[in-house]
Amino acid sequence: MKITKKELREYWGKFWYLLWEDNSWKGWVFSIVFLFLFIKLIFFPGLSLVTGTSLPLAIVESCSMYHDGNLFSDYDSWWDKHDKKYETFDLEKEIFETFIFNNGFNKGDILFIVGINPRKLEVGDVIIFNGEQKNPIIHRVVGIEEQDGKRIFSTIGDNSNHQLITEKEISGDRLIGRAVFKVAPYVGWGKLIFFEASRPPTERGLCSEN
Image 1 (cartoon, rainbow, N blue to C red):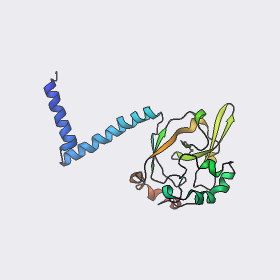
Image 2 (cartoon, rainbow, N blue to C red):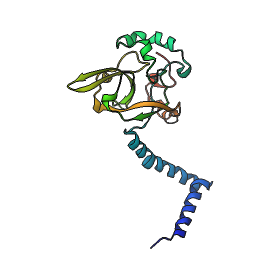
Image 3 (cartoon, rainbow, N blue to C red):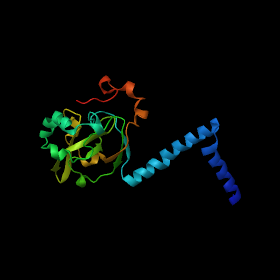
Image 4 (cartoon, rainbow, N blue to C red):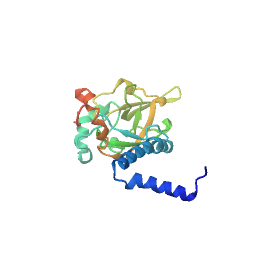
């Protein structure tokens, strides 16, 4: 059965009305289902293709990169608390100040992630990688070495007192992407709030600086 242009316009008009103008419960349900399918099947796959990573948008789920006060924090005061940690990696205050996210970011923030070539990563970049645990880790690169012609990365969280065992030698095949900017602060709490009760007590709630 061939559909005429007139019938096609009628179908489109009904679809558009149901999606955007129908305020009945049926219209709301249809709109929610449509938006979910659009985001799941079109938006995220398209964004992954453009950015070159399987995780183009990442919700920060821990406080390991938190700086007290974040945007309005005093960088000098923050550095005085953490300078000994960075001496281990030969990183000076003036160098760290030039790094991306030098004021950290907060639990619940959403970050924009792009795919990366391991050869182009630099100390100071913030990467997301497979940390051999439930969720990927988002930490700052503090060391890069060459092993058998391949680059091996070392990271640490800005708000962490020590490195995790799984982040001391990160191979290229564990990399997921590089964080380039913050999309929206705190918006990720809309998802995190449903999982807070299942977290260890020390990982629940708002962040504080170590």
